[in-house]
Length: 142
Image (cartoon, rainbow, N blue to C red):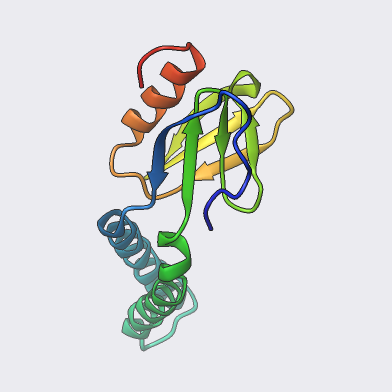
C-alpha cells in the first residue's frame, strides 16, 4: 500500500504522509460510539425490549471491522514530490491537477480538476497535510 510509481527525472520526494495508529484508533472509537447509539435508537424505535443489545452489536461490528482493517489502513503511504502526489495502487496526481483539498474528519480529500477524489486517511494534523500539499503546488518550502 505504498507508491510504486517510479520518479520522473528531476523529481524528488518532499514528504510522505502515513496513517497514524492513534488517530486510527480514535476514529474507530468515535465510529463505535455512533454505531452503538444508532443500534440502540433503531431497537427503541422498533419497540424492542432489549435496547441495550444495540450497543453491543454496534460495538462488536466496529471493533471487528477496525481490527480486521487496521494492518491494511496503517500500511498506506502517500508521497508528495515536487511534481506529483503519489499514492498506493499506482495513484498519480500531478500537482497542477489538484483543484481542491477538503477535510473529512481525520482525512484529507484531494479533488482533481477531472473530479477524481482521493483520501489521505488518518492524519494527525490534517491542516498541516493540506499546507504541505499547497506549498508544493506553489513551488515553496514544504
